[in-house]
Length: 596
Ligand SMILES: [Zn+2]
Image (cartoon, rainbow, N blue to C red):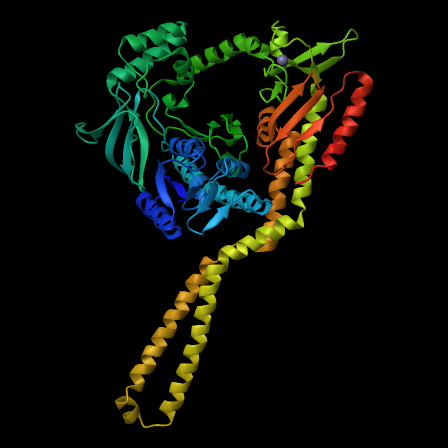
């Protein structure tokens, strides 16, 4: 009997089907196909853009078991709403790797390892990710609006402040962090405690409520003021830290203060009553720039230009006076210049393949090494770190791979693959065909409804003829008027149904799709050419499984994921300077020979 496992997920979006509904649908689908649903793995309140979900990880490891044949989810968007469509594709491939079937119950669609399926999956993942992209834009619009009004835009307030929840202008309740990392809710008038929230449980406002900051209990306010005063008069930050911790104060997470948590506090304009939004962003999708939301590629923290900050003065009471605050900012700036040279020394590595290229003899990592020739020319190499570290017993030969050549070769492979795929008519045809198939069921309903409408019109016309040929009394007694009313009502109903069915068929037209695929490919290419080191590294990670340098065979094996490129390509490495040129030539030839 076919053994299946399932996956269900609910994000925080209220529009979605509940977990129970999803589970029931999987059970019904398995039943219908005569499969045994062995287990259902679940993630609750986790976004599909997060690919490191506990339930998903369980599913992945369970799928490796030999007595699982099918992996099911209600829809592809349950498995992932990836920011990068390739991530979703690779996730599916991972499930298929051990020979499992991946089936989506809502459409009965099966993702297999075929070229067509891979492309459809790519497009669907792109669209699923797009949903979050749009959601993020809407959320950002709301946040920007609140920031402009001088309201607190979210997150734990700075130490020394409480949050005051407002409904319009009316104070509703106060939310205060407790020393154990939890929160208490206080009555806005009396200050009496009305509720407690344990650590890790965020306070949820209602949709129409907003929040602002108010000074917290006097001892915390005094602690903040003393911290600024002490720093302004030259006290070391470790004293500031110890004073806070010794007095029993803790951060909003319930941890002790450290110098690292203290320094940003000293620069926080909130203590001057100033609401500043968009000083930096951590958003996965967008940044606020020149008055609108612009898509982000970088996932890390990003500091925004001052021109893009949204500043509202006197948004809430200041805890620190202007003179002290200014003095502290001056000291902070001085201290940063003084320590700047320490940071400047940390040179960033420029080796794209670090962590992915290994030694074929010992399996150790190849690390970047720059060598300077007698004339001062610098050349970048990858060399085995086992050999380098002197473990000659494990790795006897010294073998260096010229970094520029291998990196360029791999980038070229990806580039030309993208280019070819982008203009592939087969790709567009397959995608269009699948979209037609997906919309097929709705199409059928629509045709049926249209047919029924025509029938209704004929019936109504016939009835009208009858009515014209007889006296009103006769027609009434035969019930023809009633019949006519019913027919007209029924017709209106069908028309309405048809409208709603038509409205739901909102699949993109094929021409649109072609543009979209091209645009997506172009942005990937732009990233490969001019992205940051991290961006390019992660792109390469999407394509390249492993690179192995083999000193015995004197070749570099490049193992690519079978996603879009399916062939393992072998490239002979150079040994002398003359051979280097030969190497690049043969490298470009093997790109041409790469077939899907
Ligand atoms: Zn080695």
